[in-house]
Amino acid sequence: MKKIASRIQFPLDRPITFDDLPSLLEAFAYHLPFDNQAVLSKRTLPFNEARLEQTFVTNQAGGVCYDLNHLLYEILRIKGFDVALVKATVYDNEHEVWSATGPTHVAILLQHAGATYLVDSGFGINLALRPVPLTGETVLSPSGSFRIAPNGSGYQLEMQRIGLDDTFIIGYHFYTQQTLLPEQLAAIEQVIQQHAASPFNKRSLLAVRTETGHRILTEQALTTWADGKKTIQPVPSDEQYASWKKELF
Image 1: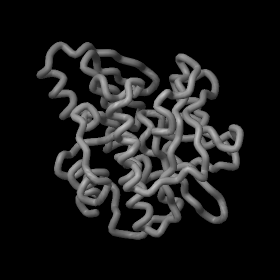
Image 2: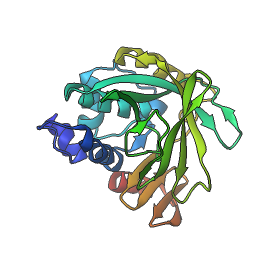
Image 3: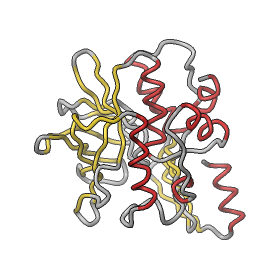
Image 4: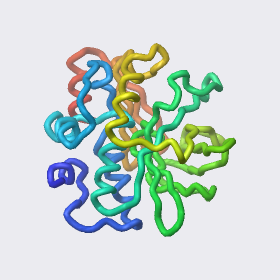
């Protein structure tokens, strides 16, 4: 825990309350990038403490949803929160269809004071940075407005991201009954690594939120949003890509 605390620059040697969760979620968002390098390399390791140690401490890497939320889940569980991993199906807003990979996004359900909240540190830059109640109230944060709406017998995350959305759009759909144990994440990892429709097994992608916006790095460009201003810098060489990756992510 001490090394993880150093990595996210958040004290984990003391109790964490529900009111501390926004600060913890921001610490995750600002210091642990969404990073698909392990997907591209087809790395497979058991979902246990050793995997978390190797990913976030030894390799100083980030991860995709099942990596980032696995770590957050373990921290919250150890600190005494009533949490469960839950699988979800992402909505493709560009093509207006649900992901062909099915329920392969992983988030967290947290029970507190008789209410259920969605907590997510692994949805790229689309992070609420706050627990979002399933009762429908809109949650405001530095990244935008987020709410949960009913969808059939399940729910969907809706978001209006600052600088990106003019209205609420759908993030993903989930059922509260479809919870997972960490060891069950391996099946989702296999789909993300191998499915033809997976958006993460074809080219490099790193993304991280900042206190003023976010950064996204691909092999083609570094895109930076800061205080509402978007800047795109082409990647001129492999050396520059490696330098930006090390320096900014």
